Length: 251
Image (cartoon, rainbow, N blue to C red; front, side, top):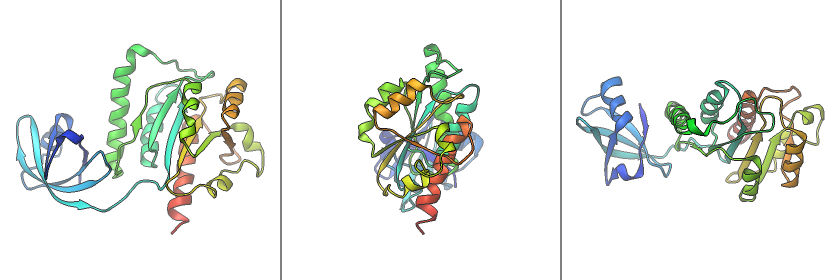
């Protein structure tokens, strides 16, 4: 059943009004009719099973049939902080990171980032990135759609890191070590409901100055396996590990 993420002001009691791309998708892509059923997600994370009651030129109106109890979110809140990668790698990170349960994404221009952020293109890029996140959220039946934050410096991001329970960063040098930076050992200390800020460097990894800055803010370096991962692989490895630890081993 198709799922749509609907803004709060579109909920009017038991009636939900879908407009713009969602309405177009229902009418032109899915070719749905009155009486067909969809799922609408409220921004608070709740999902409702709905039936189409009106199809108009500018909107589609549905009625809530029942509220669904399913919770498809990770038991911990994970923000992926990604050093800007080159090419289309960021789109892959956002899409697969959404599927694997990231709560939000934060971008930063690292010392070794090959890609440079063009402020003039921010609006168009973020529109494209948010569309990727939205479609990935619908596909994998997320309760919430992850938030994509504005590009900031690493220092700005770390200055607000005290709101997280754990601040971690994947560092290639720790891949050479055996136990003291084991991601598995750190995950054993984390409890459901806690939050993780996970920082990934760009191609070429973190600079020495960035590592020193991270350590100044008490960020813990972690080993993501014994092999050196590409920047577009590291966050996915981390999220998959978190999912396995909290969602599979706990059963």
